[in-house]
Length: 424
Ligand code: HEM
Image 1 (cartoon, helix red, strand yellow):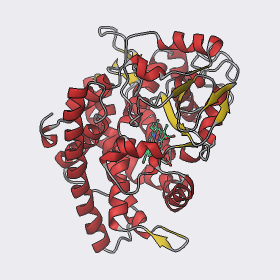
Image 2 (tube, rainbow, N blue to C red):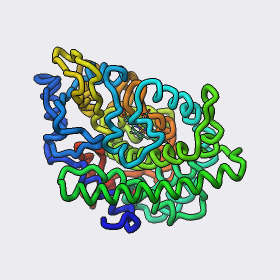
Image 3 (cartoon, protein in one colour):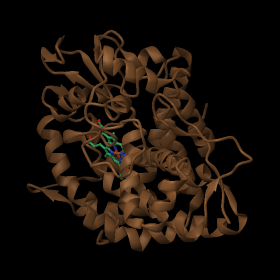
């Protein structure tokens, strides 16, 4: 990866997948055991698994790991005692500007207040019919129908990126450019590495990719502003957005839009993959959802509970604290294992079963509290559009019996590598 401009999307995706894969162990069995016997430990659990630190965790800081729903919620909801600013030292260091995930306190609150209206369901629903549905059906799925078989991950790799680019307001007529932006976004994600030699190279590639992406996004923002910025794209809305008399300048819009690219692509790709695997492995549930589309939303929520793509979240203690009976010193890192908390048997009955009929309770697939995913309605709507279109256009879709059964894997950025399907 000597030159960020040469990165291809498939290569970058595979690189990110292996980078965050961790060891081949039965994680769910470990989590079950930890919830029961060691719900909070004074160790860096993910670091021990060999997962590089996406948020630039400093190995010299004491680190705690929590496995239960209760403590995870206590940490994630309390952004004044458990802060996120350290993220700017890791992934955030690849870019300055408006990066919500590494902001704290009032600064974060005000930025969220300014941005939140753009991400609300009324805005997103308007995009659903005008942009999302036609793109998914006409550009991706309809041309696949006559093949009667597909690798669903090939579709999953592209449609979220294509959709977010359309929503952002990049010109629609240059697919090559979109692929290039997507590869840059993934090169940024591949930045943090465990191996020191690899880390230097990956960091350099990530910096170059971040710079190339900045230039490309800035050019588009300037263009939209020049044209009067009255359109309903995300860029148009960001230019018009205002909170307490404050508006965003081009640098802030550019850095925010750039931060959305890694946040919105890979996450939705893998979530779609896991959702499809869970449904295809439960043909009775798939059949119910096919016949009653009001269940699509429930299937999505349940897949995100059972198999969250972002498997853990980290915060830093702002002062000496007590958590789950353990003393946490100021400055220590606290790792919440979302994959475990989402399966906590104290909160969810038959917690390890894929059950779309379960009562909705808070889980952490989109995070929780002040930093909860601002793009969750976009993500859920994209997944909803994609699943509905797949069910409409691929009759009797099922796993391809001639190909290996899909596996949802990975300690972080979890999902399947391959989802081979056939239909009638
Ligand atoms: C299925 C897809 C997605 C998943 C699973 C996901 C997951 C998450 C999670 C877990 C967080 C919380 C981070 C934290 O607590 O530090 C988050 C934050 C965020 N997400 Fe998503 N996300 C998805 C899609 C999207 C999309 C489509 C967008 C944009 C259009 C987006 C934009 C963001 C942003 C900007 C933040 C930072 C919010 C803040 O710190 O205030 N995400 N996401």
